[in-house]
Length: 251
Ligand SMILES: [Zn+2]
Image (cartoon, rainbow, N blue to C red; front, side, top):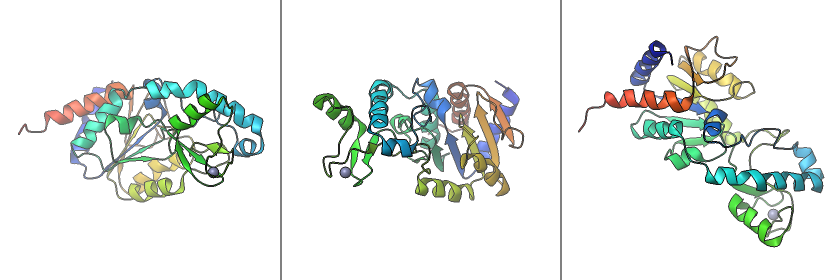
């Protein structure tokens, strides 16, 4: 851990009025959860709609890997961000993760840019189900793909974007709007190679915010942001929050 950069970033956090955090797959990975937005898991939407066989393969895979998510626990990075919100430092937390672990850690100001794996939607009539109930029904009925109990359709999927589908519109628009007004943008373990996230750091900087990246990996944005801290989010975030708490007077 680079101590000097860390201390500077901690000062920036203390001085900021509106802090936006963006998190991504590194947080899921540290809790052992697969990245469900990975194209290796999700087939192109056109194939998914056209082929019953593709849907059966998809649901077979989900039956295998979803229990990992059910049994996963928030890690120290999630817990630190929940404290970050509790102590009033957070304006909003955007996440590329789809596993719901930020909610489970106690964050409430969460916007899921890639939506959530905890839900399943019928693409014909729009009825929503919990993933748990869909998987339980498959198990009970011995079927390979779920059917909608309202319209009988058999093209049901989590609301996350498959290749060929846009990201959820409202969430992305909300991110854009809020990034116009933040003064510190903290990017933690997120994937910045694709749009729209690849333009978030540039936008925040253009609008005058400081931009900080915390990640185990290098990213294309590292060269132009204000600070980069390389390392595990589960080690760096708890350290930052501990330092912030030291500055809070005990009532
Ligand atoms: Zn339906």
